[in-house]
Structures are given as C-alpha cells and as structure tokens.
Amino acid sequence: MNILAVETSSRKLCVSGKNSKGKVFAYNVDSGLRHSELLLPLVKKGLKQSGLSMRDINYFAVGIGPGSFTGLRIGLATIKGFSAAFQKPVVGLPSLDILAYNALPADSGIICPLIDARRGLLFSALYEAKMNKLKRISPYLLIGINELLARIRPGVPVTFLGDGINLYEKNIEKRAVKRIILNKDYWYPRAENLLKLSADLINKGRTEKAAKLKPIYLYPKECQIKNQISKIKDQK
Image 1 (cartoon, rainbow, N blue to C red):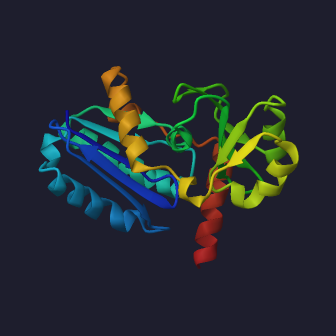
Image 2 (image 1 turned 90 degrees about the vertical axis):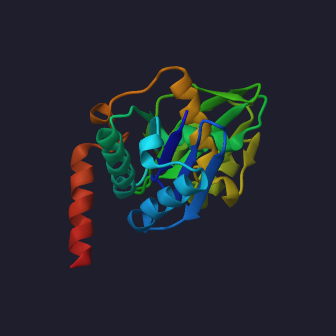
C-alpha cells in the first residue's frame, strides 16, 4: 500500500510515506511557524523520492493534536483536501501517541509526554510500556504539572519527554523519584513514528472519511476563539 502522512501540531514539521515496495521517506524539519510554506514542497519531494504521484496514494494520515491550533489546521486542511480530491480514506493519529513512541524501546514503567499548552498547563497522557509497546492508561489531558504528577503511582519508574520539560523540569525532579528525562532530541513527534502508527491503524481497518476527521483541541472553544482574536490584535 502507498501511504502519505503529515504531522503539524508542533514546531517540527513531519512528512513521511512509503510505497507498496516498502521504500520509505521521512522528513523531520524544525520549521517554526513555516508549516504552510514548507509542507507541500516536502510532500512533493517525498513523492518524487518514492516514485509516486498523488494519484498513487492509497491512504492519507495526519496528526490530529493536541498541539498548536494553527499548525493543526494546516495539516488537517491539507490532508482532508487530498483525501476528498482523490477519494481515498484517511487516518487520524493523536499527536501525543506519536510523541510517546519516541521513548521506545522500553520494557516497563510509565511514559509521560509533556506538551506546553501555555497558560500554565500541559497537554499530556500516561502510557504503560510493556515489551516495547505502549498502552494508553489515561485520557488525553489538559492539566497542570502538579496535578499530573499526582496521578502517577509512587515508586513507578517514569520517562518524561516533550517541550514541557523546558518549563517544569524542577517540578518533576521534586515529585518524581524514579525518573528518566529525555533530552531535546526526543521532544517532538517524529515522521518515523507517524508512519509506523499510520500503517498499524490501516492494517486494523481503522480508517475514516475526510469529512468525519476531527482534531483533538482539549481547550474549550471559547478559549480558542479568544486566542485567535489576541493573535490578530497583536499583528496590527
């Protein structure tokens, strides 16, 4: 099967895919606020590298958040457009899941991705690691660091990763005794994980139509609207 997948929820732009012969491409680009500028050129480059045209793609996949509101809209709009235009199914992958897989290989313990959600909050979830596989054991959370740490059972080894470490490493050091804090190389989703998880869901038949695909925002809608209004005012 031919897959094209993108993830735009963070400052790292991820574009990945593979063709039916198993040839893979994967790009991880620190694009900051330039997702809209760089996404389509990377898609074109990847398709050329794998010998595919857009019409050859059997499945599209996209990270659905939580994360940057603007970034998510760029990725979702692009993949929804491709999926609708070529009448092909799409897969939505939670960005926290994609990020959590950076912590593998791991045989035991808890994996805890931390994404800075602003306003003193984090996007997070807890995952149980067993035999190099992850099982999510909490909802996707919009949460403060101390409340999050209180959810973790004492004595359980925990691996933390994500850009939230920049803000809350001292809190983690005080509260989490058995801890591993991964460095910046592991703080953002990776195209390789995006592609693997996409293929897993496709093989399980967990695809959907583009019109039904929705992002995971977690913040209430009124907060999203206020945030966009503030950005517009700041630009004037």
